[in-house]
Image (tube, rainbow, N blue to C red; front, top):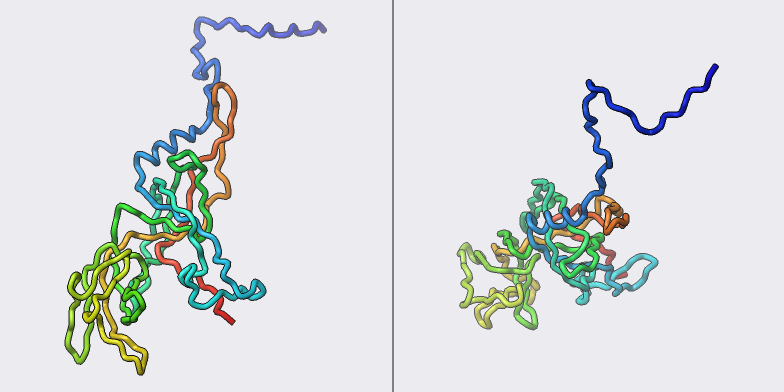
Length: 264
């Protein structure tokens, strides 16, 4: 039996054959990370990213007891040590709410997509308890608070105040509204009461007048987790395959309070 000759590598197309749909050279299938970042930049909204770390004002690491009334972290157990602006896109948002006597809290989760880098080219990383503040939008909230006399005559709400919509109290079945500029001013996101115009405080019972405060604030989201540990790809740069980080997705919650251990 004669051996079959090896094909020469070129074939002559017959008159009835059709051209192949496949290109002679396959194009580079790389995901273009830069294009993803540009899409987010063009379609996203501006956030202030505040990096978080645990507060080291601890009594002991054996039981994670945190100092009571810590002024370093405002008794939250979390320090925020750096702020940078970044643009992101909401890709999912739930509508869950929690109604309490002290106010209405947004407890639903959302997914936000961020580029791999800040505008200055440094790497953007997101960890648990980081805060994301939407700088260009405001939401209206309300809280029930007791008046608390302080050394600087200021009282803070859950979020920094951008504007007050309404403040009032009821004493002896009489509704008393409070007017900005007459009874209080807004200083550094807090209510600063005017001397002699503040609500009453009973020193015997250590109870102040109950106030309803309706105010505007920038939405604040807390990072719960990144949805993927590391998103990377390879793309062609000057003919060389180069590793590149892709945009990141983080799961966030708009209202979140970390529970810390009490002082022993």
